[in-house]
Amino acid sequence: MDINTLEISTPSNREVTLTRTFDAPRDFVFRALTEPALLKRWYGPAGWSLIVCDIDLKVGGAWHFVVSRPDGKKIGQLGVYQEIDQPTRIVNTENWEDWDAGECLVTTVLTEIDRRTTFQSTILFPSQEVRDIVVKAGLEHGAAESYTKLDELLVQEQLTDSL
Image 1: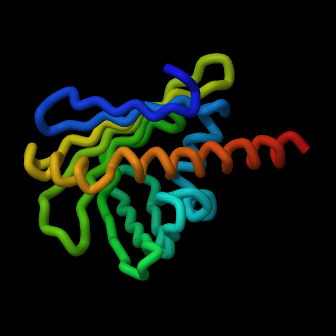
Image 2 (image 1 turned 90 degrees about the vertical axis):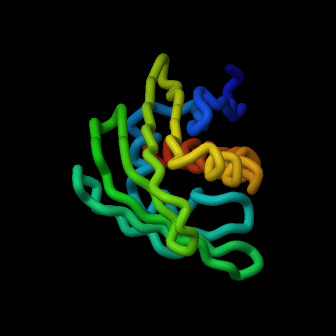
Image 3 (image 1 turned 120 degrees about the horizontal axis):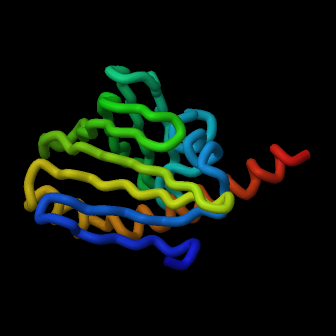
C-alpha cells in the first residue's frame, strides 16, 4: 500500500475497513485519535469543523463529537469505549444523534514499522442497508480528506516534538 493512499474494503456485508499508512510513530497517531485538542485540528473533511469533542478515554468511558459542515448543518456522533490498548488498539461503539440507524462497532488497530504507522479501522454496521447508506453518502471521500488533514497534523507535531 502506498503511503497517503486510503484503501477501503468490505470484508463482510456489514463491514467497511479503512486502511491508511502515516509517516509517523504510532504514539503520535494514537494521540491524534484520542486527544480533543489534536482531533479538532484534523477531524472531518475539508471545510468541516469539529465543534464538540468530549472524550473520556477509558473502558466504559463515553465520547461525543459534533461536526459542523460548510452549510452550517451539525452532525453528532457518540459512543462508548469498549477496549483500549494504548497505543495499539481502540474498540468503541458509535451512534448518530439525528439518525436512528443502530449502533456500530468500530475496531481501530495501529501497527508501527520503521516509524510508519498503519491505521486500520473496521466498522461493523448494524445492517448491510446502513453500511451501504454510509458508503453512498461519501464515506471514502470524507475519510480520505480527513486522513490527509491528519497526515499534515502529524508532520507538524513531529516537527514541533523534534525542536
